[in-house]
Every structure is written in structure tokens, then in C-alpha cells.
Length: 239
Length: 239
DNA sequence: ACCTAGTCTATCGTCGACAATCGTCCGGCG
DNA sequence: CGCCGGACGATTGTCGACGATAGACTAGGT
Image (tube, rainbow over all chains, first blue to last red; front, side, top):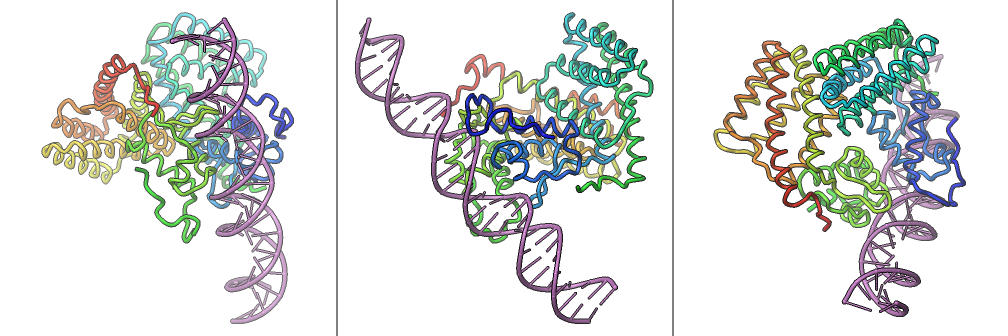
């Protein structure tokens, strides 16, 4: 379940971070983890007790999560883990493509040799994990790769929004069991192309490659979701 | 100053919205207004009393504002209205261009005839206000025009981020006195071109036009800020 | 006179309590 | 038998209060 409070609450031995930050990180992880499933209600009293804090900091943390779209807050009815529909998924990936193609273009201008080397290292990591069919590591590296590109673009606000988008994607993947990639062994190659385009400082090509890559993933998820919604008729989890 | 609470607090006659929403809207307006200036400290007790609420909802509202980048929150030292540097302005406009060019491209696909008519109406509104040299109305219409395009794009998350970006821009304009446009009479023409490109469903052209338009505004502001930072060496307002 | 140490005040972070509200359950009525 | 209305319980929204912390101020030593 949720992590218990690491140290005894109230003692406040070495409280560097505030409770709000702790709770925020904890809940965020639990949601993207799948520990807290979409649609699940988050009752303040229970959660607060479980996390060893009072309701005040908990509520502050949940406000932030709500503003990031990870939970949905209906004024006098409480907070639940957000349920994302197909339309949401389309929005999320649309926005992601917009952000990331731009980031990739910027990365073409800004990437240092070190940056490019780091990206290449990630690609070899992908090769390793795709050969050993380790989807966990592969998709993890995939995410790191894309975050890296956003970091290279050097826009903190972009990175912030992107991170938000990505945790929504993680939330999505809690609702739909997706075979993320059509072909595992295709993944490293795609990313290698991206890196080389960056190395050649070819923004147009990079943008196309990134767009196509993300679109292909998005298409798989959206297809899966149409199927799921046709059957289950969307989120009805009330627990 | 800040708006006083509209109805008597505690009476809770018809409290449709929660205090948090009220306070949030109030503070947001005050910040983008210039009622609360960048760098100004927001002391919880004082603000709470002024707004007629207790500290709990106030803090929740401020958390959200902090996550939107309108205020900056240093853990045990309090909250202040954010001070934006030149680097921030560059980030903000960079992100805005990325978002809005994409939105404009989408709008090409999605705009109905009604949408286009509405945009044309905004352009004529711009013509009126530019002829009468009414910069207030002109820039207001300008913003509405651009928001409209984001709305047409039909991506709620995009619109959300865009709105955040725009309030940061408003905050920026509290720090630098900018003559926003090089030539007032240029503005309606630029926007007319954008509308017509949308009407012709020409995404490439629209994106170029939007990019150039925003870049020109951004360039003016950035120039102004380099000047200001060279002199004043950035925000030191502590009040 | 300047720097250092101790205190002191303003303010934050957190908590428990109270009232208002929403959903639910039960009984009565058509 | 199903629908409507009123009371109950659970949960939220808000408040005031209590420690804890950071910065300022004062006093003392060199």
C-alpha cells in the first residue's frame, strides 16, 4: 500500500522537507504506481492517518495534484484519482507531441557533444534491454531518453509541463493494459535515428522522427482505449 | 487594493464556491492586475484577514498559485509574488510559441465557419481600437484572439497551460513597461493574415505567421528586459 | 568601531475541533 | 410494488490555537 511515514511523526527530529512535500511525493508515486487506482476515492481522514499527518498538509498536497490533473476534486464530494477517457488520452498525446517536437528542434541547436554522447548511451541501453526482451527497462529508458531531450532544450517550464504530461500518461497506463511497442527491436533503431538527426543538427528531420515515434505509440494506446470503452463504457470504478 | 469579501463571511448564505476558489481568483487577479507587485511578500495572516478567511483555505489557494509559477514559495520563509527575470521571459515566450503554433495548425483543421467569423469580428474590433489608438482594448482583443485559437484547437489541457503562460506574461508586464507593439496599425493586419490562412486551411502558413507575430512581441519585451536588468540588476523589491 | 553571541519577535507549519453538506437508509404514500 | 420525503452517518470546508523556525535586534567582547 502507501508507504508508511518513514520516521515517527510529531517528533520532528530532522524535518528538512515539509509534510506537504512528503505527502505530495508519496501520493504522486502511489498514483503513477498503480497503488492508488483511477477512480479510487481519497478520503482525507483515512489518508491523513495512514500517512501520519493531519488533514491540512494533505489537502494542500491534493490541491497541487488536482491542478496537475492527477486527481479530480469535486467541491463538496471529495477527491478521487482521475479517470482518463479516450478523449483525454488524445489531448495528452497531442500536447506531448507539440511540446516534444519543439523540444527536439531546440535540442538540435543546443545539444553539446556530451549531451549527444549521453543520448547515444541511452540508445545502447535500449538495445541491450530489447535484446533481452526486458520491456520494463526498455520503456523506462525510453522515458528517460525523451525527458533528456526536454532537458537539453533548456526550458524549465517546458520540462515542468512535460513531466506533468508524463505522469498523466503513467496514469493512463494504469487503466489500459497496453503492449506499448509493436516491435521491441524497432525501438532502439527509432531512437538512434533521432540522436543522429540531433548530431547532424537537422531540426526538421528530428521533429518528423519524434512526431512519428510518439504518434505510433499514441495510436496503439488510443486503439486500445476505443476497444476498452466500447466494452466497459469507461471508468465506473467506484470501489 | 484587494477586493473585500463580497458578502459577509461566516454567514455562508449561498456559498456556491468554496473559499479556496474565491481566494484563488482574487489573488490571481490581484497579481496579474498589478495590485500585488512582483517581489511583494504575501503574509498569510494579513492576507487572510483582509480576504475574510482563515489561513487554511488561503494556503491551499497559494499552493496552486505557486504550482502555476505566479508566486514563489520558500519553505519556512513565506510566499512572495514571483519575480521574473529575462531568462524566465525567454522561457515563457518560447513555450508560448511552441504551444500556439501547434494550436494554430490544429485550428486550421478544426475551425468551423462560425469560428472563422468570430475571429474576423475580433480583427475588425482590433481595427477600430487601433484607429482610435486605444492600446488597452487593442491588446485585450489581441489576447482574446489568441485564446480563441487555442480554444478552437479543442485541447483543454493545452488551453490550461496556455492560460498559465499568459498570466505569467501579464505578471511580466508588471515589471517592465513595454510599448507592446512597434506599430499599432500593424496589429490588425497581422491578425487578419492569420485568420485568412486559417480560412484557407493552410497550416504551414498559419504557423509561420503566428510564430513571427509572437516572436516580434517577445523580442521587444526581451530587449526591454535586458536594458532593465543591466540597470536595476533584477528584482530586488522586498517591500 | 566592528564583529559575535544570545535573545526576541514575527511568521510559518501543523494540528484538532466544529459546523455545513452530501449520500444513504428507512418509512410512508400513491 | 415503486416513488418520495425526512432523518442519520460520513466526509468535507473552515477555523482558531499551538509549537517551531528564521531573521532582527541588542548587548558584549576585542
